[in-house]
Image (cartoon, rainbow, N blue to C red):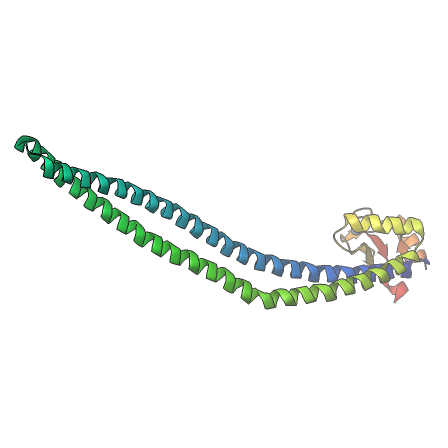
Length: 238
Ligand SMILES: [Zn+2]
């Protein structure tokens, strides 16, 4: 048996452990992202309701100013009417006062409608803020749990990485570089057992010319010609 075969399998075992821990880390990150997205949506609603409130408040204030100006003008017209002695001019002024009164009443109605709207939008803005605060409160527990899980996981990863490094330190240097390069390029495992003269990484038959070396060493360090996996014989290490 090739002396590095058990060492390689040992490194692969440690890498398997690291991969499992990585899956857990990704699950934690995904839960975190879900919580973040919920808060983000609630913050977006707060911003949107506040924008609407600011906008409608500004329009109400503008309407109020306009109304104020028109009230003043209306009062002036009324005063002018009272002082007018010429009946022809007075009749025209009276028509202006009547018209002004109608317009003023319309504008007042419009202002009242806006004031109601501001009240409704104020309530909506407060409700969206309350929802955000509630969501933050509801998430506190879940976030604490995720934080704790992350801390525990970080410890496990550090330990697993140290174990992996210790194992790979025993490997022949060329083999270690080869293994690490394969680890970066392959999604699946690097060492795969041969089964009935076939690479189980890609289910391609191993050429006759290489079977001899495989049987003698228990491993084909050069790797499968099709998928690059390092092929070994499970019977040898069993
Ligand atoms: Zn293969």
